[in-house]
Amino acid sequence: MKRREFFIGSSAIVGVGAMSSMSQLLGAPETGAAPFDAANVKPASAPVVTNMSAEGFTVLWGVSGPATGWVEYGETPEMGKRSVGERGLMPYDSYVIKARIEGLKPGTKYYYRVHTRGVNFVNAYKILPAEPILSEVGAVTTLNPKGATADFIVWNDTHEVKAVLTRLAELTRAQSADFLLWNGDQTNYMLDEREMVEQFLNPAGQTYARDLPLMYVRGNHDVRGVAARSLPRFTDTPDDLYYYSFRQGPLAALVMDTGEDKPDDHPVYGGLNDFSGFRKQQQAWLEQEIQKPHIKSAPYKVLFCHIPMCWKRPEEKGAYCVEGHDLWHDLLVKAGVQLVISGHTHDATWMPAEGKRPYGQLIGGGPKLEGATIIRGKADAKELRVQMTDLTGKELALVQIKPHKRG
Image 1 (cartoon, one colour):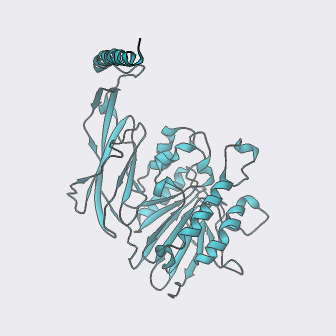
Image 2 (cartoon, rainbow, N blue to C red):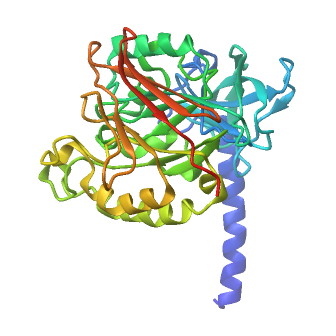
Image 3 (cartoon, helix red, strand yellow):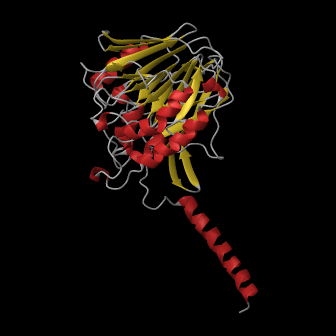
């Protein structure tokens, strides 16, 4: 048989086969797929607003089974706009729905609610969606780089402790802020994606970021466990990187990922870590980032990172990020960073600037109710005021920083 004739014949055979297969699929369930009622799929968490910028934000929420969803939003309670899919497809997931909204105005309040729609994906040609379930209406305000003030709250090292999470959520709801920054170690480790819904989107059953945008910082416990590589599905950061920057009013925030607290070749990691390379990657990024106008022009510059840049007992190498300090310190000094806010040690500590370290180091407490802390910051034209208290309200540290002079 000639080559040309072979291809013509094959095409005809394939065409008949495809038509036959399609007609079979239209009436047959997916092989191995258990039938279920999509109407039984429910939201598994309140919405979590995260990755806030001056032009947009992301909403994530947990679901109890296979579902799609979207966000309805607008500048009035009537809303009227709807989030779009990605690359032509609407979200579809068994654990979490994620939707990004762009094209917004800086410093503007937006109302929103999420729609959850269970989906029985029988096969490629038979998809049975349920009726949408609507959440309550929430409201958030986009960042405003030109604003006069910046107000923020910091949590750290909650480690899934329900009593601590419940108290932190109560204290946070009692105060207005522009953003909540969760400074690492939300978890102990990650073993299962279903559990990650509770760990990241429904911690202790708390509605914690529906009306207050979350800025996420990855901690060393948040890279542990067989499911750690699924973390980007349950969080959202610019370009899905765990180092980024943003500007709110007079405050420029740098977020960096300090990685693990032991060397990459430590036997406990089984050869699966490369945080040394990752820190070098961040060094190159930081060198470029600090030259950008939103950083250079800021009266106040703060680094948020889980593991501190220094510690009161330098011989305790696991208590601070030795390599991160060695790689980033000179650039932080060059940028004029005045304060580093961290966690990790479970020992609430304030280390004022001194000598060759012109930035202060503030470290939040640990996961026990009596040792946990909440950090509140407020920046205006006169000063950046950062207060760390325990969960009874007792002040543990008060940091007051004057603005950089323009010049």
